[in-house]
Amino acid sequence: MIRLKSNQLKVGMVTAQSIFNEKGAPFLVRGTPLTDRYIYRLRQLSVPELHVTSLSADFQLPPPPDVIEERTRVQAVDSVAETFRQAEVNGQFDMDLMEQCADLLVRDIMTKKKNLVQITDIRLHDSYTFSHSVNVAVLATMLGNLCGYSKSKLQVITLGGLLHDIGKLAVPTPILNKTSSLTADEFKIIRRHPSEGRKILKELNSPIASILAIIAVQHHEHLDGSGYPYHVRGKSIHPYSRITAIADVYDALTSARSYKRAYKPNVVYQMMMKNSPGHFDMDRLRLFFDNVAIYPVGTVMKTQLGYAIVKKVVFGHTLAPIVVVFADKNGNLLPKPFGVNLAHCRRDAIHYVMDDVELLNFIRHTGIDPAVFLDDDLRAMRDYPRIGKHEI
Image 1 (cartoon, one colour):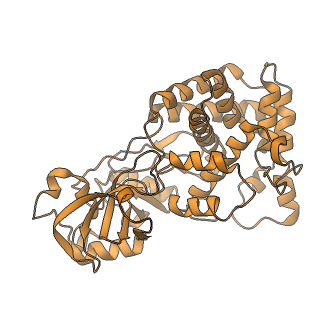
Image 2 (tube, helix red, strand yellow):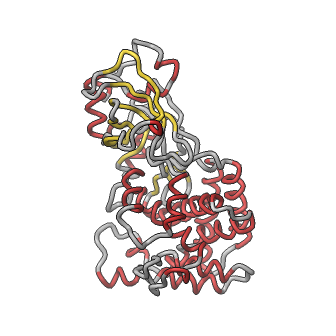
Image 3 (cartoon, helix red, strand yellow):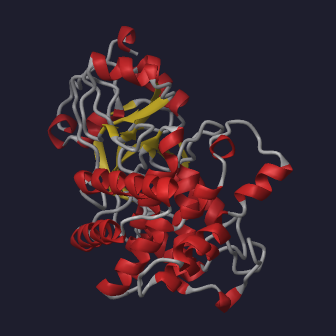
């Protein structure tokens, strides 16, 4: 996969991300070949960049499978958007709709438990809360499933993820969607949303209202007491809140916002595992990253064996994917690329992940998109499909 600016997109390229518009509806779903109309609308909507599966419009590689069905994700985003709108207009919302949504998400996650988290979607700023809430619910439920929780408990965790940011209804929209730095006063207002969420959810006519309120109020708390709003620490933080906190931070860091680019999963892994001591439940965090593609399928990297592209990621071995080595250490294409499981190599086998600029330069130099090496039939060929410089 490669991340391209909107002016670099070509007709026929396959999207590796879904895009949700300002109303929370899907504008473009992952796995869709781009058309002139789609590219024009992406530029109109000011979508700055997009992951595609291949730079070659002729090589239509599908994206890796998701942890839920795309139609389930789309339906869930629509349900959350409608729920938040109802709550904003009349202070009421349809818990039956949320419970149906949670049931669909739990069913998909339990069915697709062998699939790993890959690349996150793109949300235009007005729809960020809706699709972020769905992603947090998906990630939290996935982690809850790995922890061995029953289906009924997973449904509570899912609902907690869907509604964890409901308190943002109390935050003025100009502050919520501000693209520049927040002032100290604005930041104080933003930090009220967990406690505002608790107020809203405690009033629900539901037997699980109290636990949903706890998830909402605690999802920004840290185990060492450095979080907010109440500096709760240690065992005082509910296990469901600890799970939701991990999902919330991961999705925020891997998502593009108007004021920042999306961080790559391997960078987020370092940020959460190494640079946030005391913030997270480390046992749950390690389990979480067992099911997240730290190096997603299509990632191009330099290894001790040469340049390689990730072909497969295996649960529990996400730091050491299965790759196809296609060039030597100097970037010269190999006459016969070969597959290797990096779990069988040294722990420092991965030197670095190629950034988008370096990858584009490599493709310009060789005329070959490494994505072709993910196709077993093409990999057996000596005359690989080439990309002309005019196409880049």
